[in-house]
Image (cartoon, rainbow, N blue to C red):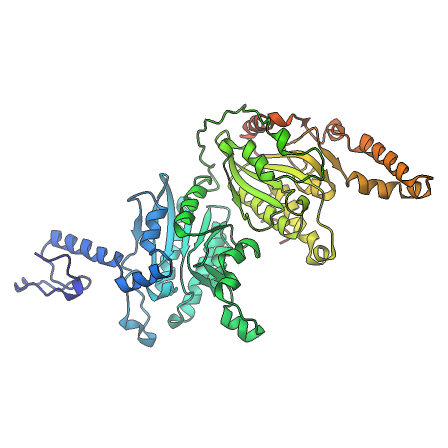
Length: 547
C-alpha cells in the first residue's frame, strides 16, 4: 500500500515486476495497476498540486498575503469551486525554463458559486514564477473569460502577479492582448470585478482598468504602469511602490480603485456582497432580497437631517441611510471625488443606483472628478439594468481656471452623455437647490428622467438668488439711494417670481412637490411602476461619448 504522506517524487517503484505491457505513468512516476489505482494516484497527485512547498507559502504569509487556495475558499460557497486545467504546463525552453515546468503554470482558473449563483474566476499564484503571465498561463485565463461570456456569468480576477514572464518574450505580451480584448468584449455583458491583492504592474494594470469594479488591499496591493525605479531614472523622483500606486493612492487620488480594504478577508467578503447586488449578465436583473423594512415607513427624520438654509451643511449619506432598506448601502469610490456620492442600495428589496451631491464636500459642487465618477457609475447601472435615483442639492459646476483648463466642459459632458443614453428607470429628486447647468446635467426631465420630484424647500434656477440679482439688477442697485435696501427688494422679488418651490411644478418640469416624510414611499411606488419600462435604442454602431 502506498503511503500518501510520502511525496510521489520520492516514492520507490513497486517491488513487484511490472506486468507485460505496463509502463511508468508520465505524471505519477509509478506503474499503474488498475483503474482504481489510477484514480487513487490522481487524487493524491492533485492534492500535492494544491499544497505548494511550505517555504513559498511561508513567504506569502510573511508578506501579509493569503495563498491562492485560501482566497478562493473565502470567495466561493463551501466546496463549490471547480478547477479547470490544473495540469497545464508551459512549453518554453529558453533560459532553463524547460527544467522548471510546474503544473498549473501560476494561475488557478475555474468556477464556483457565490450565494448559489455561478461565478467564474482566475487567480494568480505568486508562489509559482511570481504569478507572472506566460503563454499557457494566458490561455487558461482566455478559456475562463470565454466561458464566462458564453454562459453569462460574472468574472472575478484575483491579481497577485509580477506581470509578463520575461523568459517567454512576445508570447507573454500577446497573452495580455487576448485578455484586454476579452475584457472589452465582456464590458456591459457580464459584471467584471478585479481584486488586486499584490503587485499589478506594467501592461497587467490595464486589464483591471477595463473592468467594472476594482478592489485593493492596503499595504500589499499596488498598481502602476512604470515602477519606482523607472520613475527615479526618468524624472529623478524617489518614491516607494505604495506611494506610487498603493491602495490609498488609487482610492483617494487617482480614482482607479472602487473599494479599498485593510485586509483580504474583509475585501473578499465585500466582493461577495457586491455580487449579491449585481445581475449575472445584461439580460437579467439583480437579485431581489426580501426585507422587513416597510414600504410606507415614514421619513420624518428628514426634517432634522436637511436644513432649510441652502448654505447650511449636512451629510447626504445620512439621507441615504434614512431612505433605503434597513439603512444599508454600498458606496463606490468613497474616498475620491467626495463631493458626489455614488452608491448601490435597495428599495423594497430591489437594487437601485443612487447618485447624490454631497454638501459636506466642496458645498456639493460638480467638478471634473465628480463628473467622471458619476458618469462611470451611471453607465454601469444602465449596463446592468439597475434603476437610477438622483438626489440633487447642487449650487452648480465648480468655477475656476483649474477646472476650465482641465476640461470641465468635456468631463461634465461625460455625465450628461451617460444620463441621456441611459434606458433604465430614472427618477430625479430635488432636496434643496438645483442651479444652472448642474441641474440639467443631473438627470432633469429635459434630458430624459422618467419622473422628477422636489421637496418644498426646492430652488430651481439658472443661478442662486444673490448672484442672479447682482447680474439682472446691477444698474438699478448701483444707482439707488439705498443700494442695500434695493438689493433686498430685488432679492425678494426674484425669489417670489422665479425661485418659488412650485414654479417648476407649474410648468411641468417637476412632476410633484412631495413631503420629505413620504420620500421612501414615493420612490418605491414610482420604481414599481417603471419596472417594465422599455426604451429602444437608435440603430447605430455605437455612440461617440466625450471620453
